[in-house]
Image (cartoon, rainbow, N blue to C red; front, side):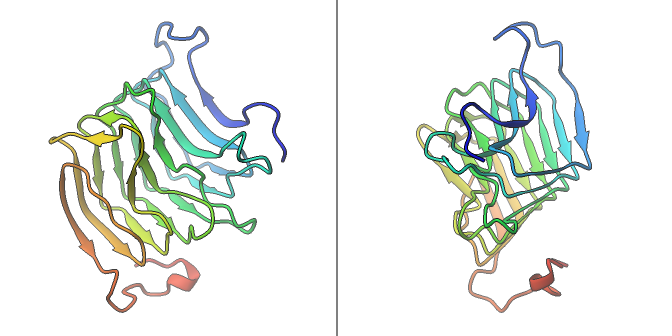
Length: 202
């Protein structure tokens, strides 16, 4: 699609900009999101949970103007992204800017765990941090065959000393860090998975 305004699969923003946070604590699960310019926008909404998502082919023909985002987050705290799959689909797009802590900031206390990020080799990032995100926990994720690092910093992105990037399995992908980092890095080892060609990452 050639977009002329933002395209949003899930639009979580207050009705009044910077108004009362009356739409907090929502859980979105078992959703397949594809062929959008932005899959999820979570702005000014605390304690959101995204689980059992399947997300791929997030992009736009005019991506230089309307660049794609997987889950874009700002002015939101206490969220969770878990047990989901993020990958490049049949149209050769991944999840755009990925799970993206946007440079406007105001985010803290997010947890990202138990997810698969894989085969994003042409168009798609994993976790991108472009503002300070205190107390960010990134645990028990698998990163396979991705062009970009598991965690990428841009602009003023930062993880404080309470952040953790731990027990993640990384193969044929760049790594990253966030506060305390201790991971299973197997970039140079034989492929450890049962059948990565069929997306079986046991």
